[in-house]
Length: 193
Image (cartoon, rainbow, N blue to C red; front, side):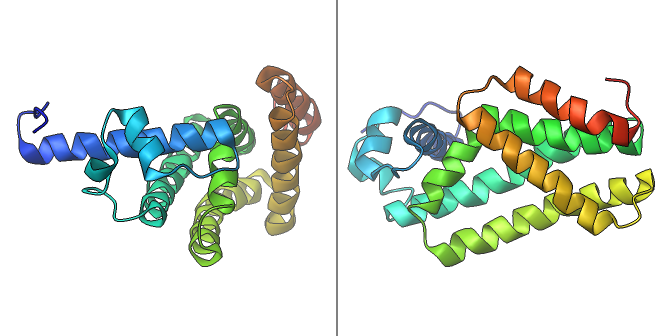
């Protein structure tokens, strides 16, 4: 029986579960399109496949847990970055840069891997929830900034994020992409960039 590496069994199980989720995310980020098997995840965490089944009943169960874990973290990170800005234009810029940073860190590759491996309904619902969570503060910042149609302006900002994300995923360094987005957006946002 493996040695418990925490003060309590519950804490040990929580740590093991986190390690399994982290390993699944790493593998998804590396492969970008192929969801890992429970055996691959177990190998990455140093657990036997049967041990992984103690935490997740199937690969789909594991991938659904990755979604449930990842999307709130993405949203929280973006919100945290936006909250640091001192004005509405700065919040919009922070929104863009936070999303691009997550893409550069491989989080978008994880989502691509999930898209090819998880039930379309589960991923679509979670994606819709994430985009709604992200869109609300973006629209509010654009409205405060003075956009005449904040919803449409948010769509345009999202288009910039999407195109910039593609550039990062195609190998353009994050700093270069951020510089281009700043060059494009700073005049509209009245930011000194």
